[in-house]
Length: 421
Image 1 (spheres, rainbow, N blue to C red):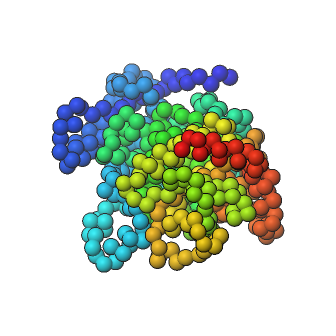
Image 2 (cartoon, rainbow, N blue to C red):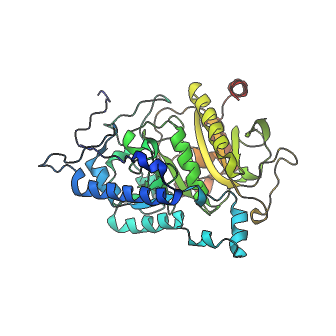
Image 3 (cartoon, rainbow, N blue to C red):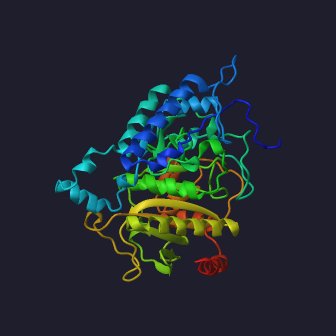
């Protein structure tokens, strides 16, 4: 079947800001943005969805359209507007300010993660989950098969335009940046119908563009900004490329609460270039790049480095996994592993990127299939048999067989990365 994009049930929606908005003050822009977004939602609700009997009465200027079902789902979701003033660079410093009551404003801010958890729990009564927790290995939807890292999006296979009301939890809008690439109808957080943990959700950038599972600058920015708004060290964001254990070919990342830190955050790294670091076996069981954000002024540098690295991996057809977390400052000296009290050191948004072997074809969901979470050292077990029999030697043997790249490939990759940087 030819996977060309043909969606006759699309609802044509878009937000376009007037040119006069550029002349407004910051506060006026914030209010204007929110008013226009609300007006957009009202107009879609009143006029924009084509019924089975009528014609569309609202037409968008956008080339990217959302199906009626997805528009209905978005209308049920929570609108969350934010700005760069909501970002928390260092959780430890932020906690100190709150404890000394020096930052009253932060206490008044809406808590993105609390809203998400509340919406996630509320979704249970609408039976949107495939199963209760702990049954993922037995009842998870069968992963799709992929043959290429850059396989195109296919509208005839499962994708997230098919989300239903109450599956979309939050739609995000940045008040600093309301434009075609960051407009409110495109960027959502939805439930994962096959969750690993309470609150396990999907971050879906530009959902109506129907992008394949290839990481984009927009997706990297969205994930980074969500991390910066969550005041919780136990929340991580994961990305699996095609051939890197992704199960759906529609651009998405996982927002994953996980109450255990990765031991990777305590490891020493090599400095490669600028703000890019590298880790290799035996110091960690798989090759790993690291990028860390330690200042709001360095956000663009963080994003640029991540984009360059991900583009290099894609150009060289190397599958990869991302693990966003909070970590102490990256070390390049001292012992291979030095554990610290996390409340005593800076807690910074850090991205670990694992280049890996490609995995073609779908494997049974009950198997141990190393993806982003597992390569960061957080093992999941879907059967009691595996949980009781697994040990470190056996797990690392599976990682070596299914994920660890040959040293020659990694060395060639490092040389290309140094040339890029």
